[in-house]
Image 1 (cartoon, one colour):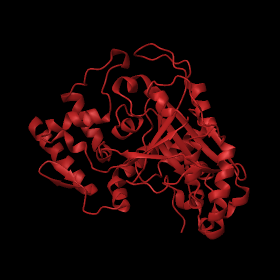
Image 2 (cartoon, rainbow, N blue to C red):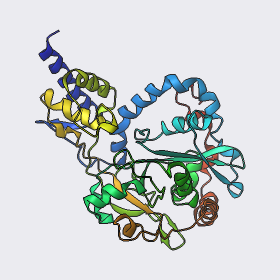
Image 3 (cartoon, rainbow, N blue to C red):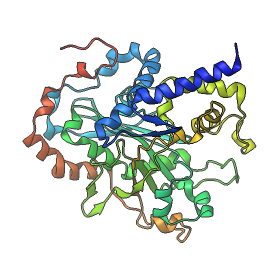
Image 4 (tube, rainbow, N blue to C red):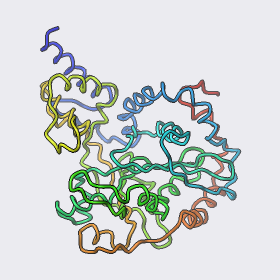
Length: 381
């Protein structure tokens, strides 16, 4: 087959795909529709989400009836008797399958996390049903809003970034989400149990680059809103302490808009026509990331590599786990002055501040049925 024809066909597929998702393409640039709202942003992600659901079907569809048994019927919830328990997800367990399954219901495609990972599911001990989940992974190396907020230089970031993790998925599942339990899950990021689990799992690990042992101290968690400016994380506090600090916005770049099945073709093209950027030998061979593949392939198709700038800017939040998080990450303090609060203390505060008040004024959670949560099984009316 003619190589130039292959390139032209793939180029046209890229442009058609972007326009089909809802982007405006003109003269090598993509822009968002005018006055795009949160529902519009959901639609931009729709193809990528659906592709991820279909790719996951083979490995999860046979488990769906069992996994749906963890989703509560609204009539099974007794707000005054809700009692959360947070369980760390271990590989090869049913909780891992449940984590993967629930993550497929997010309105944006959820990654599996990068590098180090720590995942939790939160159950209601009163009925054994799933309340929500969160996952922590390695943060991106360079994030302007975060780096400016911390105030560190490049050397400090290189040395201290290992003490930071990013929440790549976070939230409650229905019907608990109707009772504002998304706020509960968000608050649990800051509990003692999370940083202790991190320390237990990663303390003593040796860095591939400098060969130093890691002390296992986690002092900061970051996360980004799913759909531009966030409302869920605003005013998430514990007594007088603001847990989620608003620190800016992402640059609006990434590769989700190539994740609707098109990425596989770009990756295949890269295998024949591109070479990975040189990197540390200890990291192994291959490309640094999906973004590197996209940026290398686009110019070969006669398209600008800055098509990765989809312009969907997400709000960035920082959750300090210590009173001197900034000073520690800048190398000014060696000892960490921790905030101390248990998961139980957080729930007690949440129950009084949000849960019971919401349950008293809004009973819509009782109408939820687990069958509506199914991805592949036939849904009941």
